[in-house]
Image 1 (cartoon, rainbow, N blue to C red):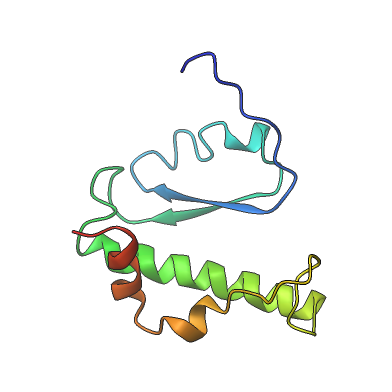
Image 2 (image 1 turned 90 degrees about the vertical axis):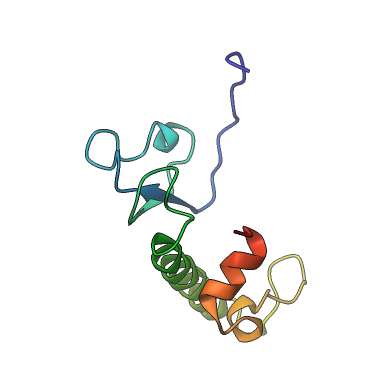
Length: 108
């Protein structure tokens, strides 16, 4: 695995970074392959950020990020279709309870 070299990603991406190492190495090297990287700090350590109460903060940051992306996408594509002709995800309309949505993705 140490020989793995990810290819460059020329699309917006978000790194949810635990507060544990945010000051030492904010992007952990990901900006080198993803120049459009946004770093979102979240409470907890790498191990505890998915456990309560940090999970609620992570869920809030995740949904804020999705909402911002969907808003930007809606401004770029008012028809509701992405460039490939598919309808946008509408994640926020389908999952109003943010913590429960995160628990579906990562069960306790």
